[in-house]
Image (tube, rainbow, N blue to C red; front, side, top):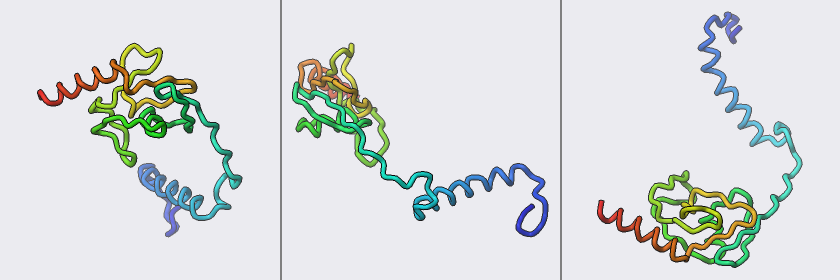
Length: 139
């Protein structure tokens, strides 16, 4: 029954209204803390230790290899990565050598794992970036 007292006969009308109900519910939980399911503060996530050029760096889970290297003081060249945009990983300029990986990995799209060893300045990383740059300039 709708607000005017008429029965809603169409299931598609109910489906169209469902996202609106969800949006109002989520907006309520953001504005009014009592509406949210949990009012307790979330504990700080456990930091992961990774090694960038054999230098220990502690980062939060979900951090990309590119961000971990930046925190370790190593700048990695990139064309398609930006903090506020979704990860594309198309340019392949951010390739780095990672221990136990057969090929260089795109550091912008790869999340860190505990104990990961990353070599962004190795000969393999540099050769991979040179190959990508050559390909981009040729085409």
